[in-house]
Structures are given as C-alpha cells and as structure tokens.
Length: 146
Figure: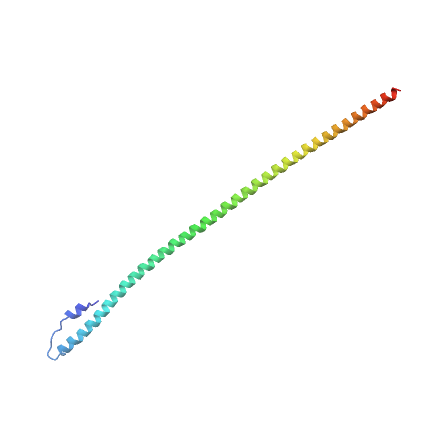
C-alpha cells in the first residue's frame, strides 16, 4: 500500500510536451492530503477494530466462564437435591422403624398392664371368696353357739 510520503517523494521524468509541473504538483498536494487523511482514518479504524476484537474476545471468555459457573451451579443444585432426597428417605425410614418400635413397645406395655389388671381382678375375686368363706364360717359359728 502506498504511503502519503511515497506519493510526495515520487519524481516524474520531464518531457517537452508534458503536463504543467505546477498543476501536477498542486494536484498531487491535494491527492497527498486526501490520501493522508484516508491513511490516518484507515489506521484509526484498524486500531478500533483491534480494540473491539479484544473486547469481543474478553466477552467470549466471560461468557464461557459464566456458562461454566452456571453448569457447576446446576450440578451442585442437582447434587444437593439428590442428597436431600437421600437424607429425607433415610429420615423417613428411621421414623418408620422408630414408629414400629414404639408401637411394639406400647403393645407390649398394654399387654403387660392388661395382664396385671387381670391378676388384680383375680386377686380381688379370691379375696372376696375368702371373705365370703370366713363370713359364712363366722355365721355358721354364731348359729352353732346357740
């Protein structure tokens, strides 16, 4: 690519029937100015493009990092959910075992108390029978005393 300095330093061979040197020089001065502006603008645009390319790459890296973070968070959430379900199932199983144990213990205690009550009722009946027998014996003795 031509640089503005290349245009400015360009020398042409002079011929007898050639163009006016002053007109050519004046025109080349205008071309040099315009070309220099275009050259600077092109360089500025290349610099901006480089910055924008770097920014896009930085955002792509950020996006990649964010996606990895989201994936890790999703995996952690799934792990936490699985662990919570496992723990909940363990708690439920333990509660069922505890409930079964308590129910069996209550049934055993109920049976024991019921047997104690039956034994007490039996003792009461025997006591009443002894009392009746003693009372009958006393009545019989009183009747015999006459």
